Image (spheres, rainbow, N blue to C red):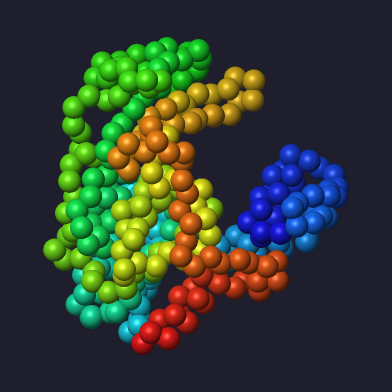
Amino acid sequence: MDPNFQCYFNNLYGFFCSQPDTFLITTGKGEIKTLALKRGTPLFNEIVLSFGRTYFGTDEERILTRIRTDEYGYFRFKNFQKEIRKVKIYDQFVSFINDLNKNKTPNVIIDLRDNNGGEALMCGEMASYFADSSFTVCTNSYHTLKRKPTYLAMMSEKLYFRSRFLITHKEDTLRKVNGRYNEQKEIKPNKDGFKGHIYILVGPFTQSASSMFCSFLMNQQNVTFVGSETNGAINFFWAGHFFDARLPNLQTNFDFGVELLEFKKSSVKTEAQLPLVPDVKIIYTIDDVMKHRDLEMEWVKNDIRKNK
């Protein structure tokens, strides 16, 4: 069983259910018996925490980790925001690229495995340091047809939803945003960009602006994607402004994107949402997780040594 699925299953079932149980899952390749570990038991904690440390690192490392060796530079950040808890992500990134160029570091590793997105324009600006041709962050932007949400009274951004159709027109089953906006401007390769080989680590938590970042660099000869299939799409997705409401009975917040951002021209009308399938697919075993192995980094380091 894919360890990502195993971790999800144990986390979700352990959260909502208090008793241990077993399940039989039938697949095209046979049957799998899986155990839903009781939350709070030593084995449950060991598996979940081991997976978290291996895949995410500590809280401090999740915000930003920056490393440079003679062979490669490594940059990992939580999401595409200019600043997170006083850590200036964009400034650190630019400084990091300048440092690589100054020291003629031949390879760079961008770790997006725990990056859940963020600002689309910042994503494009950072991608320009690796891109070999010009690109546009968004080709089109659309809104849903719903003028007044049913649960408007529970929402946090009431004013936006009352006025969001002012600069749109109906196009098929959506409303297309008129005119041009910042995300539609052409972004050219940065003159101070990195010219070496680029490894991008991806996984099921790579989504929104982080999968968009990947889409700008696909098909480049000097870019290798390593990991597992992304949850985020590489042609369009729902994001931008969100329907955000507090559910009174559950006393919890619920949100989902209601603005469709298209970054592959005409894909909204001609394609289903497409994830990024990495060039090198990495599969973990439970034993790998328990030993805190980082198979993506192991593969990249070995590839760097082979091509040295």
